[in-house]
Length: 190
Ligand SMILES: N[C@@H](CCC(=O)N[C@@H](CSCO)C(=O)NCC(=O)O)C(=O)O
Ligand SMILES: [Zn+2]
Ligand SMILES: [Zn+2]
Image (cartoon, rainbow, N blue to C red):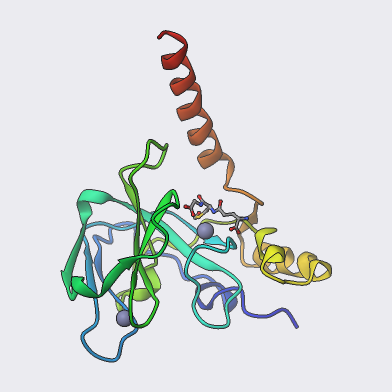
């Protein structure tokens, strides 16, 4: 049997509400939870198999989407946040006590700078955009997953209606490449 991909995917994906306007995320601490308020729905929500994104216990994948930075505010227990890896492109702000990642922010020049990476399952509300695709699928092998089982992982995503990629989906890869092309053009003029 294939292990859990993610609780938001395993038993069928529930569609989000296109008019959903956001809500609060909470870490997993039993008390003094970190609270982050999001002033909009997420975009580009996706399953991510990379080793850096936060995954719930027992899940092979993370589910992560983005929100404009100005729609993200820490509204309680900010002092419990720390940046896990200050050298990573996405600086993941996690709870020092329970380890949950509340938001990931990009400070370097990057196609996605201005967007924070968040996990909607940390909310008690429904209506968030549902996962749109699965990215970084082959990355789970780097974390010890049996390569012989990859077909069944990809099939399970497809059965739930999600296309699988080993980096990001074409729209996001095109956005990254467009950003790189513009940067190259700008620097060749110097
Ligand atoms: N195989 C590597 C891939 C790590 C990776 O590049 N992750 C992506 C996707 S995160 C959400 O989509 C990324 O952009 N990382 C930048 C960063 O994490 O700072 C692995 O599994 O580690
Ligand atoms: Zn916590
Ligand atoms: Zn990731």
